[in-house]
Image (cartoon, rainbow, N blue to C red; front, side):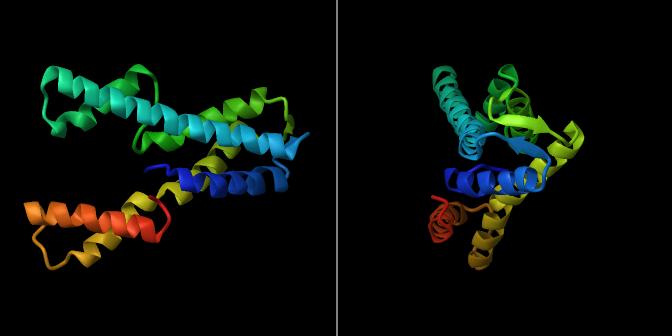
Length: 170
């Protein structure tokens, strides 16, 4: 699962609709509440980018192959108690729950934590599922190539960029 910057506004709108409009939360200033939710998502992107850059630096310093990037990223994320991959949804949902409890713009929380967490995870999963969908679409275009070959990898990256642009995700 991956969060794209272009998906932040729809996620914020979905959170508002699912929690505020439904009566699970009461806010004193809807616009400021939106900014708070958006800040959690932008902080996730910033930290994720920082971990990736730090991991690339570690690979370079240690002379490790690029294939080790995922392992090093996971180690860096664990050190910071940060969720990447499938753990990202849980990390973001927990950050939002903490935000709701300490925000000046949340007047009252009517739903319990498990209910809020479930609703947040559903919203995030729906908006962050693009990785799997993109992969399926790209592979549909590359049926004529053998998976795992150099040609496949090169064409996969090209096609992925085209599909991302098509869906406004680049």
